[in-house]
Length: 82
Image (tube, rainbow, N blue to C red; front, side):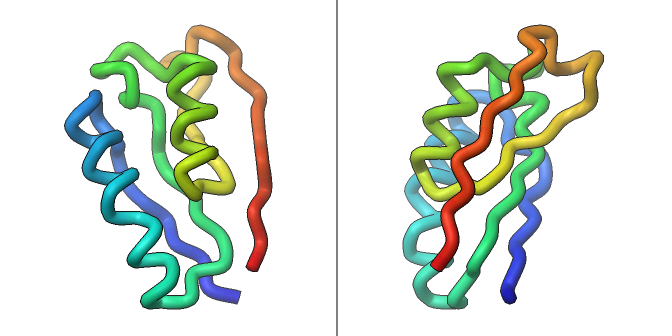
């Protein structure tokens, strides 16, 4: 099983870049599971449910962060396996 861990996804530029890059990289490297640090996905203000679902729909299996940076107490997951 190939697992990809992605560091800090920061704001819209980070989200957009990740969503453009990830599908091709997953196919090229046969990545089975993707985890990304999404605690700054909302421009350094944690992550919202809407942003988390956008990242999950874009190919991540999990978005993670620390409790203090995730004020929405999001618990969501859409595991995607090959």
